[in-house]
Image (cartoon, rainbow, N blue to C red; front, top):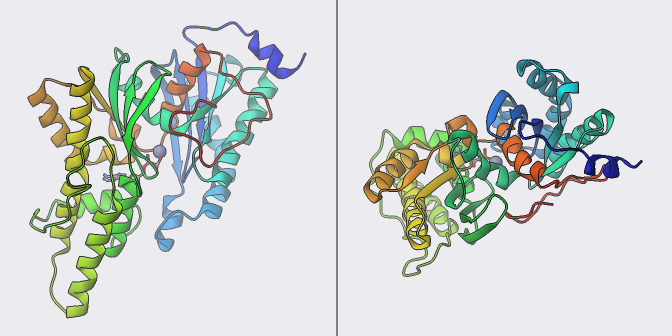
Length: 351
Ligand code: KG4
Ligand code: ZN
């Protein structure tokens, strides 16, 4: 019997043990999730320090580091969960979007392991994984709700109508929010990763530099970070050319407010417009303290319940891939061993 035919007939378990593997960027991560909502283990190995001298992730270095880290990561995730490989019911793996060489390491490893154990292989969309971090945070969370997604590659307001039915209400027309943080960090002389470093510097500054208002006069849920980023770069370059003093902390603080206030406003607008009661957040930028504090305040004011994943569930991790993997497991969205990595998939794609 062919592998795919065999696993299609596998009986589903409500408390399934799923091993999840994530390798889309510079984190090699493994996690075991029970019943879709309980984290039994989470291991994250990052190659970040290797990329710092280059000011950003170098795809070849990331891939090489994944190949050396993947076995150790998976072995530790299984061991920390107090189980053995034979206890697993399925393997979930990020197949897109991300760096193709990096994704391929996780996909190849997951395929080989699923095939050898004779258990289902579940392809997971990385962005859907970020949304599913909410289910690990609030065990009672159920659609419908709005998810504010802000990472290094994506920025979007998503109407999560059902576990698998997403409507993207709007998104960035150019750079993602995290990408803008990384580029602004670079012009301010801060090292990679830019987001946390801009946040740290912003705490010492004031919001006193006027920056362009994003998509001025336009309603709706779209974003544009390119103009804001360019305004910061031009501000710094002009000051440098004139030999004038400028306060980097004030720039960081003003940029951070301009970049994030609009996310808060539009996310709450979406909750109200759809008549929902719950907002959740996901993606690396949602680890930002300014965003989190202000979302808490604004949600309290508007009577909206906020599902705020802890910071380590906002940035890349495998537990969120396991949570999303469980949703796909229940729908028997299984892949055959010809599953391939895909650098660019739609936010809502499940295959
Ligand atoms: O979700 P993530 O870990 O990876 C992607 O899927 O892209 O997001 C990484 C992005 C980077 O651009 C990083 O600078 C940003 O999230 N980020 C932050 C913070 N922590 C990470 N941005 C702002 N403030 C932070 N504290
Ligand atoms: Zn991510």
